[in-house]
Length: 254
Length: 288
Image 1: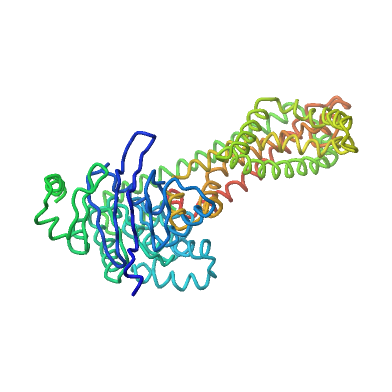
Image 2: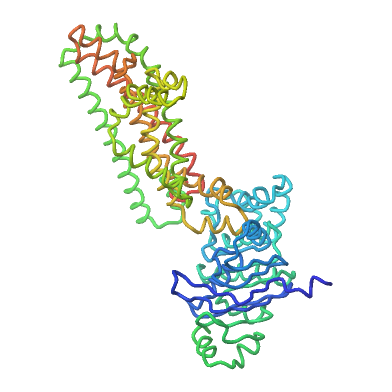
């Protein structure tokens, strides 16, 4: 297919400077193909979360180009269509946060149908049908009418994934989705992410979950000081890394 | 409710632990009993004080309907003023948080000016000074403006109170909006919501829960400040009570009576506030 030839996400020469001096991203390039699962590793403060947040413009890149499913936005370009393009990119990308960020005043079901009804203008009935499918898929059908505060961290993150998927995104961004979880709850979230990858979702994940990086990812990238220092298949990165920094970093987290 | 959950958990708990649980339960019951007794004492004390003072209850009863007839104005003024204040507060808070320099500066000056001047001066400003402004404007060639700006007492009072409380509540609403964590905004944005949808669907409903107690505070204060419209000769509650008290030289009776009427109104409001807060608390682990 033609679609397959074009990368789903294309990041070209992206820079991000905070407060006029803190240079967090220094000319990042990244292409992610449809259906690919990419894991970004790196020490804290290396800029990996910032990069992820630049993809859906939660952070404005200072320079460079972001392309998601054919929508291209150049940093610093300010025309009338830009705002709509950003909203379009956000509709095509789902994002899961470290702190879940479910809406506490809504039930689980209301959280999931919020995007489709408010943003896409779907009828509530139609949105509920799909939301229930998603709840079943993440294994939380019985929590349908609970408020998020009643759920465990792992359950909350699974609801957050369902909420993102309700928008039928083309790309899923995971920003350290398991870092705030108790160790015994990590598995249930990683399991959902793994099934998502197997069903062909395009995934970009920042995570320290080594099982996911080693066994699920198609490609692993290591970031340090705002640049890529290494890229390759999980086997290569974990067994035979080229770079000394990679070796040090992996020794720390494994 | 706590006692019940404890009991269900108590099955299979060793006897010495059960004794501790029992102790906690009796302690709570004791506390509740003591509270009731203390309140009862206070009420009895108050009633005795009223009797000892030798109040003329017949006189009070005779004038009660006349004074109560003024409560209509009190309610009308307070209700319309608080409605106006709520609208101004939301618009003002959005202005204070806005990145639009015009909108932001107007909202900031509004809050600063109104909070920085006495309500009494503002009331007279709306009632007595506005017609003069109208006259000046008419001099610049806007026909009929003076008549429009010459407000009757009640609308002037409603505007004065509404605009004044709107300024205070602007800050309450702004603080409420800012108390919602940035993650909520980010989650809404990540779903593709625009700024209006984010505010309406995600931020404001959560902020509302935070601002209900302080806004109820304002509402209760407003009920009492509505007596300021008596300055413009409106025959509301306190005006009537003071008038009658002075004429018959029985101010104590009338003042105590009107104080009680205000108190009862505020107790009703407080009750409503608690109901609303309970409703809003859905999904909050600390309460449910």
